[in-house]
Length: 611
Image (tube, rainbow, N blue to C red):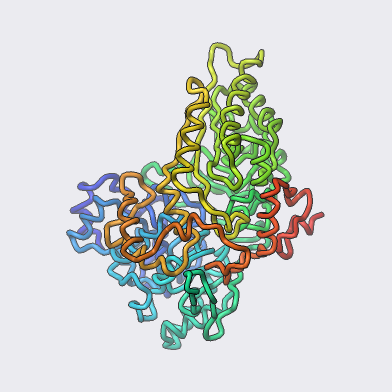
């Protein structure tokens, strides 16, 4: 254990509580008493990782098996890394304070592409080679899950295997297989060949990728019995699937410092830019009774006085009003606030407003995404200006004076008229506010506009579309600033260089592994943090590797091109994505799943079965 060494260095770093473990509800097991050790690595800081629901679920799931141990591992900030390297402390788990290199599994959850460099940094800090080919021993098995493994090709050279889809069932299947293979004296390769037969397991080394002369992909060939397509794992019944009765409670404040209850998975909407909306299909709900039971449990065992009812679109739950009514008795008596972080403006109502007033006193957030109805139809947002105005009216009449609006620049078919439409929409909201007799008296309105840049992502209809060049994005940002009402509208913009790199990593192939390795060697890590992000070093890495990021980012892709991720099956068909992209270019919308099945290819969809 590193306890004595840590005692000497922790007062030299910021927020030592990030690095000590021992929090309320954390697992306490002696490593000598377990047969399997899983190091669950979140490739970012403690404050961010401890807010992640997926880690909470799988951490408790594994630790509920008496003979298994799951430890939490996070990326240290530079001050702690410097102390660790200077005092011979390898990356360790918070539960045992022992090096994770002795674990059976080292598993990363990949939630965003800018965390890729942290995977290499953490492996190196753990005292392990970063390339999978240089780790021939059976253990540790370095694996990854999360949304980014839908296209794990850019980091394929560093991973032994990936878990595609939802992990509650497959995680334990994988651990039991390794337990058997250890007993049988199998090699790592023998284990990986057997693991590839488990639905949802992708073993990169069992696929041969060939390229054309223009660097597009020529073929992806499975080897040694690996499936031609890796089919993602899904949980059919959310009322029966494992969910923790409690969560680890941190000593210090984290990004989302509250209890969390998942109310549904998937999304019915089908926004054409939104990767999560396609990756997490089909749409599945928990019953009100299950949500109520889990809410009470997690609040009572953690002491939190706020619970977030989380999902991609919480207000789309078919029994949202009954759910809130059922939770009201407990929350009011226990003085627990209910937070609904994901609301659709066309589902916003006075009832929902009453429930969130105690949590969101300063303002409400909506995402029109585009300033004109034409462009909202292109992206299949399926909300009208009337929906936006109705939602804002309810908010203003309910006492709110601030609204935050999310928009996206660089969407397919976007014109300057669409940019001007953002300013015009903001002005109409301002006019609405001052036209209301029962608005808050003596207070002006504040509109915050957040501008992100469109990033084409795998498994969306827009996976074929280019991201506009930097000059185009800057021109459109500048034009919006010229036409917007500067006094009552505050505009914040994303940095193009960040979205440019994210797009390259999102749509990249295995050739990018050497770029990521080179960038990491140049000191790139914690790329999601502005103060540690070095775009110039990333571009140097691309140049030194002879790779142009524009090939991945700014190129229109044909419908018949083999994508780097074509051997992944997330259940949504390629024909459907192509059809949706074509509809986008004619500004035609597709109804949401509850209105009409669009034939996306997901078999056994509960929404369709219920009709």
